[in-house]
Amino acid sequence: MNATSTLTLGGLLAALVVLTCNLYPWWTGGREMGQLAPFGKGFGGAACAAACPGGILGWTHSRTGSVGNSAGETAGQSLTGARAGTGLTAGQLTGLTATGAIVVVIAVTLVVLAYKSAGKKDKKRIAGGAFVGSVLLLTAGVAGALAWIPGALNATGDALVAAVQGAGIL
Image 1: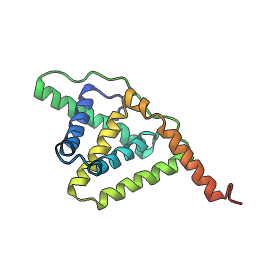
Image 2 (image 1 turned 90 degrees about the vertical axis):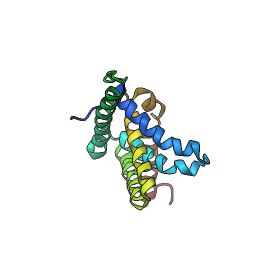
Image 3 (image 1 turned 60 degrees about the horizontal axis):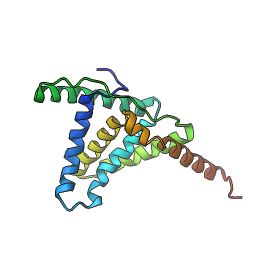
Image 4 (image 1 turned 45 degrees about the horizontal axis):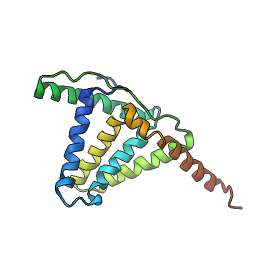
């Protein structure tokens, strides 16, 4: 199975099933926003990885699409008999610079540390958020809606580098 930048209906199905499994306890429970925090951490980390044009994080992002496509197509066809291999319009986050990459690595590191210190249920929610975020960011709609992320990462990295170099301080 190779990495892909195109999501199929099966991949969308897989992401929506994981999203449903993560939102259901929140919806049927007290609907406290804190319950969504682990899922949001995973989604945020995936959004940062989706901004990467390559490297391990970029490869992992595209590989998640391949895994989602395969799992979703198998589940969709097995459960319904309908083929779910039709491709969706592809999208991607572009424009990450070297200074933005610093912020991406720190953000993903924070998500990994949160995962390592989380309990069993929250680990599943973080992983679910990362999967859903990575898969949905392969679509034109979600990538278009979050197209501001690389610019925000770059601006944060620029400000960090400027602060470290003493720009504007002296």
